[in-house]
Length: 211
Length: 263
Image (tube, rainbow over all chains, first blue to last red; front, top):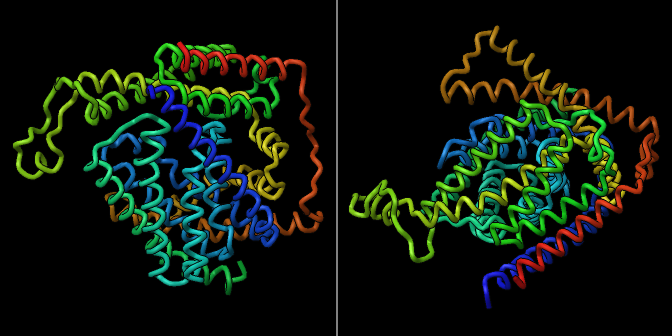
């Protein structure tokens, strides 16, 4: 089998998985989304914007730092994500936040590109499953840290082991992948910890402060 | 730079749905194509469409700068991580004999074949980047959301995205105001600790203020009987030009895939 045929097979698998995943997920999300009140939806919209703003400095220059860019990128992102999940603790909220932020960024500045959608769908799916299984929506620090670690593992492993070689045809050495995944996971956990601490204060204002 | 620019060019007049279909086609081609010439054909097609939108000189300069950054960074990274044989080392940065780092990485060398491979692969990213810029420059965000809802995106998600766009400038302005207020109260943002402190002192009031205005928006939507079935002030209409663009896109895609597979 020549390289072109292999590429077509890989591309076929990727696209098939992509379309199946999106269709199944869209079907579930359509039903789930009805459980959100208008205020929940507006709150999620706010967090979609906040997630976009939180990573803006990294688009404007910090992302050029070699080796450690993913570390600084993950901290504010995870922190805002955890606060958002804590304020809307419902199944589907994580997906709306992560996928909504991806589509929002694509509409505003990155252009609609389905190749980046699995990058949002996979961590959303993993986190939704995690929250359902633990029956806890970042209510405890341990749960928040677990969510941070899980997000880091899924996002960075997907990029370096799948999207990098099969979509962008870029290859990385094993030590580099390990280094990036470890720092991504640590940064996500730090972000989750910061997010949890801040969310406690915000939640009090949200629930008791007539916000 | 990456924002809608109101002009009257053929690409501005294309329906957002057609642009979404074109993006899907390019996404498939970017993964499938592996031949340098075919990737160049795809890039030149998109770049010439971009030039048709009459971009400003500053816009063009920034695009060239972004392309150069992607080109160089991909070349260097793939120069390091090239794994196929034969490979000819051009520069040795860390020798295998260097304790710890040398042993851990197996030596850091830049390979000539890797540099060439990286240069070719950077074309994929450049193609996606140019198409993104083309779409963003020529499509009003709310039209793109309307286009996506026509493709089956739930109305409630469309509403969420619209609210997000509406909030963006006010949140940025609010963040700026809070930071100035905190600085006047003596907040120092220097160093890593300063940044972390700043993040804490910015996030809490910002989120609380946003939630407060969010409640007003939700109330306003509720009193207007917000449901899933919505009508729109603006209706998207396909012109004769849209099927033509989609047909050209399909023909080009089939041609490129055919050339990749059989030539």
